[in-house]
Length: 207
Length: 182
Ligand code: SF4
Ligand code: SF4
Ligand code: FES
Image 1 (tube, protein in one colour):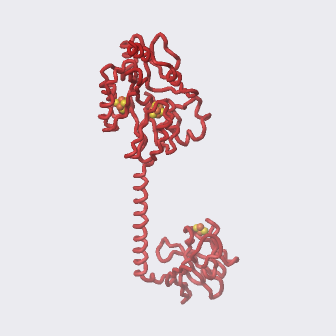
Image 2 (image 1 turned 30 degrees about the vertical axis):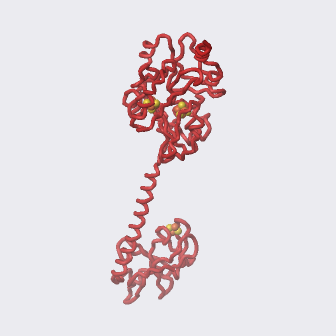
Image 3 (image 1 turned 30 degrees about the horizontal axis):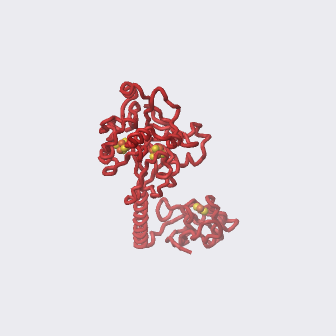
């Protein structure tokens, strides 16, 4: 069964409180039982406690699958990029290195790349992925576009990303401020900027 | 939801049509419906089952050969009256079973030859060419010598089975089949 088309994934990193609930919940998903496929990224660890959850964005042109020499990464008809197929994966880690979002994980004990598959056993029957079902601040949200528009009056969803020359369109959406809604999120540029949190921390330290 | 055309690339990275995409994209499709997936397990199953079939086939061939040898020579059967076959001509007959087509060739006053008609390559019916002293198989251009039945050209490697004959009382009789390997 495919994931219902009206249900979409929205990530709102500004709401992430770093509680790691999603990390715990993810390992309880049946498609990758015991292995957590989500991780929290520390935005600027030395200066702020801000974290942001990283899940597979389910790219329209998945770099991971395009670089796979064993033809092991496949996408289902609903656009969900699945874990590598066990009989094909040669554990070369090309996908791990190539994914611009840093998603696939090499399980070297299994000699298999595993990745977030949107909890396919759940989302393909219309349920929320584990992470979205537990996230207390709703930084991870799985639902309809109308719902998110009603709930987040000041945010808008963007699903285009720029990494240098590579533009990636994704199935998963990132929430950005509605007034300053960019055409795409320039990930590389964002990495060079000083974070706002840094200034606040410095002020606190200097007093 | 409309189902995607299973043979078509559903989403291309740059949005250009499928024909403009590099060939490898069609050879290694990312979307599952276009993927022809043969698991190692399926392949192993296939290998095991075909090997098994070959092994069983060998046993079956062995049993058939043994049964044929036990059956001994088939009974004598009249093929034709001597007067019905002019010198240089050929007739077909069935021996020993009704579906075993054979050829009887009269090459001289007292010389008779008979062979199974089934080509020893892939079992097409051979055609006698008495004036050229050969049998010709039209399927893959196989040739057999008329007097010995041995292959002389083309793919066949074994001679045609010879039908042993007996001519008496104005009639030609088939008395047995002589299978030869060379
Ligand atoms: S985010 Fe990474 S793992 Fe997910 S589809 Fe895109 S390239 Fe593949
Ligand atoms: S979407 Fe599912 S698999 Fe991916 S991180 Fe969330 S809970 Fe885990
Ligand atoms: S069947 Fe006679 S030559 Fe092939």
